[in-house]
Amino acid sequence: MNAFIRNHIINTVCLVTILLIVVHNNHTMAVGSLDLVRKDFFSTNKSCYNHNFTMFIKQIVQNSTQYHHNFTSYIREVVKNNTRFNQNFTSYINELVKNSTKDVLLKMDSMKKDIMHLNKDEMIMAVIKSLQRDITKTSDDMKMVRVELATEIANEEDSVNRILTPIGVIQTSMEIMRETVKQMQQEVKKNMETIKSEYDNIQMICKTNIEKLKRNITEVIRNEIKDIEDNLERVITERAYKIEDKVDNLEMRIRSKVSPPLDCQGVLRNGNFKDGVYQIYPYNDPHVVKRVFCDMEGGKGWTTLLIRRPQVVQQNFQRTWVQYQSGFGTPTGEFWLGLDAIHGITQRHHQVLRIELQDWDGNIGWAEYQGMWIHSETELYRLHVGHYTGNVGDSLAYHNNQKFSTYDQDNDEWRIGNCATRYHGKGGFWYQRCGYTTPTGIYMEKTVNSSGIAWKKWNNTWMTLKKMVFKIRPE
View 1 (tube, one colour):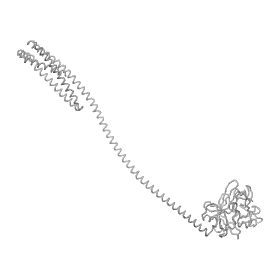
View 2 (cartoon, rainbow, N blue to C red; view 1 turned 180 degrees about the vertical axis):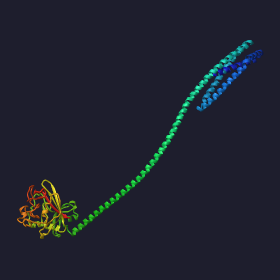
View 3 (cartoon, rainbow, N blue to C red; view 1 turned 90 degrees about the vertical axis):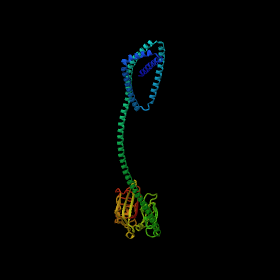
View 4 (cartoon, rainbow, N blue to C red; view 1 turned 60 degrees about the vertical axis):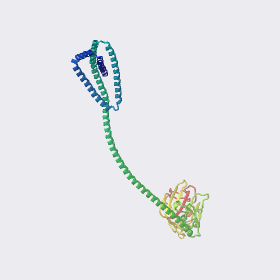
């Protein structure tokens, strides 16, 4: 298309130049001949040529204009800010025109020189031939222009298609993106609804947990208050008990100043809580004192009546009636409290009698009797014991309600002899027809002998024992 425009401009300029030269030189004949030739040449073809060429050019221009307009509009719509192309294209056209004009001027100068050397006839023929050549060339150029235009149009269509194809892809992508965005919006909406539902559930759970926490805190506070109240009540009670104990101790001390202790429980009430030897006043006479071993086990205040156990020098229990009345031995060794003292203690309160035994193999046993007490000398210190509990058998029940006997005063029920002298090592005790226990017998190593210290109901034998203790406390 560019070659066609350039050639057309050159031919037109050449034709105009020739005419100007002819007119300038006042060659009337040549001009007339030229007019005749032109009239003759164009008489038949001028109208058709001019019309067809003009219509063709107009159609080309119109199509080009329409195409350029559509293409420009499309380019403007698709590719914005594309002014650089127009600037480059304008520069190119200006350069093309400039070069074409230069060629025409050079050709005109050459033709002018040639024409000046030709004669008139030759000039006319040359013009005619030149015009024929131009027409032929123009016709050829028009064919080439048609081909070039078709090629250019096809190329432009390909370019447009190449442009439209990515645009179509972009449009398709945009549709996909639009659909994706729409789906994402729906998903976001759905997620928002889910989040709102979850938020409502969480809010409800939090509200429930807060209410539960409030209840738990209230319950914890209530329990803490109750614990504090219980602890306070316990502390107050403990302190009250301590105060009562102190008051009791004070009372016992005051009482001890006014009334001396009758037994070990009285000693305990006076504030003495450790095992040991204490003074008691069993006759209720402040001038008659007995030293006795007090067993404060469990705060019970046991008064020891009889102790038999191993010693470097064993105590002799073959004693007279008077000695058994007053007592003998040492409270920390072997010991007998005395019948008068036992009567003095038991006449005020019935006692619990506890008997503790140990054999030579290390076995330990015990027996307890409720309601123990003895009469005075008038009744020969008759013994009374009640209900038995223990793990060594009831050997003392046979001696219940019996009078006390010694080797020098026979008060037992055995008519043909004295149990204290014949069978039981001359120790005093509450014998019936002798008996089943010999607490005051002779101290012996492990052997079977009724004269030794024995508790027959334990293993149903007269096996001698290593230790035996009698102790009492008020019921």
